[in-house]
Length: 199
Image (tube, rainbow, N blue to C red; front, side, top):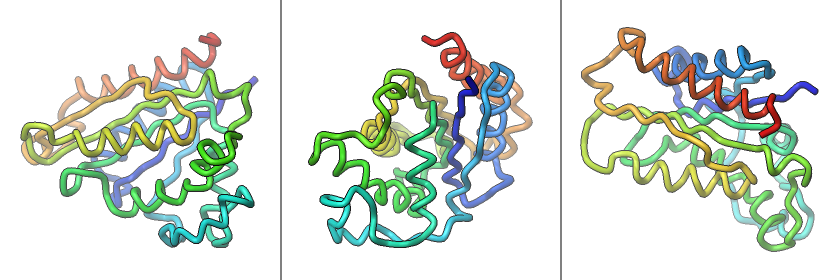
């Protein structure tokens, strides 16, 4: 069975430091024997959640945009890696809007008590959060971590691990820090290994 791990890039810079860390983690996943796919939030065409509550009764969103395909992908994924910079002590607006559109999953799980995720997948679904921050200040990742943990819980993904890198304003180019790139690789590899070994 081929296990699929999605990489979700929340940065608008598709070739920036966050994207490089995500790709390194996904390489680790592939080397562990899993398939990967990268979703770039900045490349998607979708509107923010309008709270029309159609999803409460119908199990899907009435807004016909790129999110319709995303719902299927997130139902079927085996694990997830989200990589994003911190902006204003939280996550970028586009990524937050993307996550808010998973009200479809929220309503299914908490209102109807019927998760959209197949039961046989839930136990193995794990998540890795990769975050970077320009500044090195206390609690800089707190807001982003709370949002990430809530999102993972809504989509039935266990918050397994994290890689949090502050002070990027001084590092500037993540490729000058092979230790951090290797950390991303190892965490991705471990995520994939857990899937392949059925743990």
